[in-house]
Amino acid sequence: MLVYAVDVGTTNLKVVLYSETLERLAIASAPARYSRDGERVEFDPALLFRTVLDLINQCGSAYANTAAHHAIISVTGQAESLVLLDRAGEPVRPGMSWLDDRATAEADEIGAVFGDGEAFAVTGQPHPSATWPAAKLRWLRHHEPETLDRTHSVLMIKDDLLRRLTGHAVGEITTRGFTYFWNIRKAEYWHEMGDFCGIAPEALPEVLPAGSDLGAVLPEVGEALPPSRGYRVNVGALDHFCAMAGTGSYAPNVVSESAGTVLSVSQLVRGWTFEPDRQVSFHSGLTDGDTVLFNGVDGGGAALEWFRLQSLAGMRYGELERQLRARKVSAAPMFMPYLTGVNPPDFFPNAKGAFVELDLGHDRIDMAFAVEEGIAHLLRRNIDYLTTDRANGIVSTGGGAASTYWSQLKADVCGLDLLVPDEQEATCRGAAILALVAAGELGRIADARHLHPPRTKLFQPSGDPAREDRYRLFEQYLDRLYGAR
Image 1 (cartoon, one colour):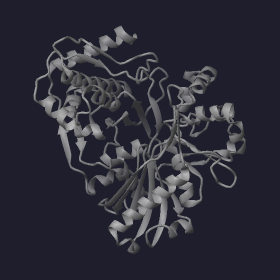
Image 2 (spheres, rainbow, N blue to C red; image 1 turned 30 degrees about the vertical axis):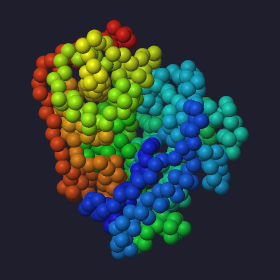
Image 3 (cartoon, rainbow, N blue to C red; image 1 turned 45 degrees about the horizontal axis):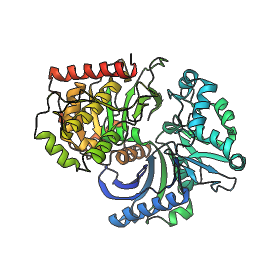
C-alpha cells in the first residue's frame, strides 16, 4: 500500500509518498499561487487541483513501481480559505485565502451583534476575525450579493480538493472550528451565524470525523494519476493536528509548538470543560471525544524575520546563530513581540512591538537575542495559559526548530524539556498515519511511533534563575505597557 500525503499549505503545496510502514519514498512541492491586490488575496481552486495532481505524478514517477500497489490520497493543510460553487460545481468567484483581510469591518460587526463571549462558547474562537469564512461571507453579502445569490455550496479549501478527487463535497471536523459558524461542543453548524452571513443550511457540507475514508477517486481523476491497483481518498485533518500525530506529540500534557512564521501552540486535553474566562481556542481532535487547545501567535517567527530583514541586512540565520553563540549576552534589552497587536493569550488590540531596557552599549546582535527571547517569553505565556495542568514537555517543529541556540533558549525560558524531531514533513507524516489507521494497517495513531520514527534532539532546561527573573521582567512590562493583568 502507498500513501500520497497532500499538504495544502499557505506558502507551498506539497505531496509526500509513503509506504505502508511510513518509509518516505518521494517528495514534490510547488509554490502556492495567489492574486494579490492590497488586502485582497485570492486563488484559483482549479489551478490548485491541477498542481496537486502534478505533484502526485512527480512522486509516482520518482518511485516508479506504483502499479503494484493500492494507494490512498490523504489530505491535510490549511483551514479557513474559502471556495464558493454554483449548482454545476463551478466556482462563482476566485477562492478567498485566509490571508485576505478585506472583512475587518464585518468581523467587528459580527462581534457587535453576537458578542465575543457567546460566540466564543459556540465557535471555540475567543474573537471574531477577518480570517474566518463567516466574516468574508458577510463581506460578500454587503459588497457582492449577486455572488452569494449564485452560490450553491460553501466549502473550505480542503473540502473542495476532496470534492474534486471524489465527487463528494464534505467537510472534516478538525477544520470546522476555523469557520466561525460551527458549534464545536454540539458538533453541528451554528445556523444563527449562517443566517446572519447569508448562508442557506443546505449549502454547507456534511462533516466527517478526522481520518475518515471517503471512498474511491473519480474515474477521470484515476486516469490522471500514476498507475495503481486503485485509489482511495482520506479526509485527513488540519495541518497543525496532523503535525502532532506525525511527531508523536498527540498525547495529553505534551505541548506541540510549530515554530514558523506564525507561532502555533497546541495540546491534546481529555476531560476538558469550557471555561469562559480562559480565552484559548478549542477544537475537535483527531479521535472522537478529544479536544485540542490551540493558539496561533502572529508575532512568532514573523517578528524575527522582520528584524533580520530590517536590522540585520538579511543576515542568514546560520550566521546569526554563529554570532549569538560567540558571545555571552548579558543585560540584554527586552523585546515585546506585539508587532501585530492581537496575540494570544492577551489579545491586546492596540499593542505595538517595543524594545525596552535599551542603551548605547547594545548592538544589533543583542537586539536579535532580545527578539528570540521575547518570542520564547510569548511561547511560555501561551503554554502557561493553555491548561491548568503542568505540561510534561514541548515538541518543536517548523523552521525555527532548526536553530539549536533558539531551541535551548526556549527550553530555558519555559523550564521544560524541548524535543526537536528530525522530521521536516511532520504534517504529511501525520496525514499518512491517519490514512493507515483508517485502512487497518495501524490500530491507532500512537502505533506509528514504531514505524521509521524520526531521530530527535533533546534540549533540557538549564535551571538558571536569571531566566525566571527575565520572564518576570517581561510580565512587568506587559502590565506597564499594555495593562496586562
